[in-house]
Image 1: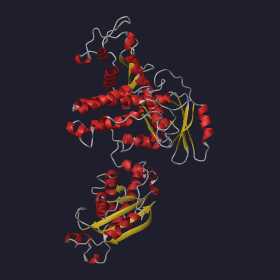
Image 2 (image 1 turned 120 degrees about the vertical axis):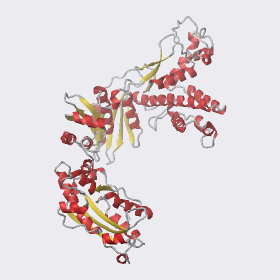
Image 3 (image 1 turned 120 degrees about the horizontal axis):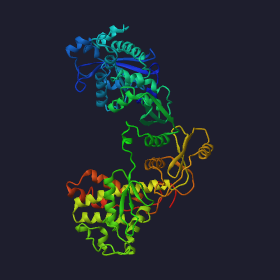
Image 4 (image 1 turned 90 degrees about the vertical axis):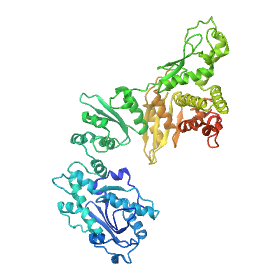
Length: 599
């Protein structure tokens, strides 16, 4: 038997007069769903004011009816002789209510008993959308108009055709009339769909609701929206797959953030940029955030330009942390402290100097630098070095950054294993975490650089309805985007967006001048299921010794870090988390990025 399913958002957004409601009422042996049982179910299916069907039955609870319940409902134990048990009734009711919005007066009581019965019978409870007429009445009606929101009082107020009698079907019929009366009231306040009705339930200020018209002109398509203030300044930038629906939510009770309510109070209009699909919307949002730095976007308050590790230009180069990357830099790091930790780690294993004295090419390094273990710089471990002898250290760094050699990473991993073998678990854990930070940044950079290195990349991804999302990427920037609907051949669309795509002038930095967040979005999109490379000006590949093959190691290291290091014995020596698994994962040969391109 098929069971009721949760309505989709599109179904919930249909007009109220096209929404199917099942209004239900129960009679029970008592007030607790855990210990009492259902004696009667009554339900009415209604849509657009028309009754589509009714469901009513007595139910044998398997126990006697308490006297006070008999007095209240008139249902006696004798009346239930021969009545079906709940296991025969509940599947039929769920089928009756299938695909509808479940309505009840004091819905928590009725749905609580139904869920408890389903649980005892091992029947999965469908994720119904539920509407409580008690809550709706308290939201719609004033205290003067309705001092009480009992069903009897509301049925009198709305002149219900059926008087509630504490019998399930009569009470369900009365609730239908109450529901219609309440819906008529909210319709005058611009509430015309179930989604709007749910948003209306929480308290919303008059000023907030009055600005609903700001969303009236927006399309129900993907794009970026911009709230503008009294001086036409951009207050907030956001993105959505359905602009109209998303912006409309800012003017309803579903928006509970005080910061956003303050922003809505200042807003005078909403602009939008319609986009072909979600990726284009995400990229345009990033660009607009960078251009306007809107005050109500937390992400734009402190723009993430990132920190980079680069070699200084001198006879004995050392690592420096900068905002602007050089051609062979490592990054970006969002936090300067992470960049400093990574720089210190790489310098230690590459044996790059950390002393800050400027040295002429004619002198030797190490004459005045003590070894690292007494506070000196790593290069001092090799003894006094000329500039030519020292050049091996920066060469190792460049090879690591360019993905030509990961021997430095292998050395780091080996050091962790050695510390774990010596039972220096806390030291091993700290080194493990520092390595993970460094490798994560390196891996992200290699992945993004693989995209940014391509002069032109055209890719496609299937849409849910059988069409194609299309993108043109040039040197890591989204230069064009479109959708080829189902039934439309995609190649003419590809040719059109390629011809009109943005011209991009690259530089020599690792990401060719592309913003890290933008190229990161594109790289993530290219790795999703169903993506096809249409054409590319050069192979889409990562270096043979890139950090991409360290992804599983980093994931395991992060899991271990979240688990903590106490007790150390358990983390490093137990059978569940052996040191070999935590710190000695094999390095897979790198090459292709998720199946795109070749070595």
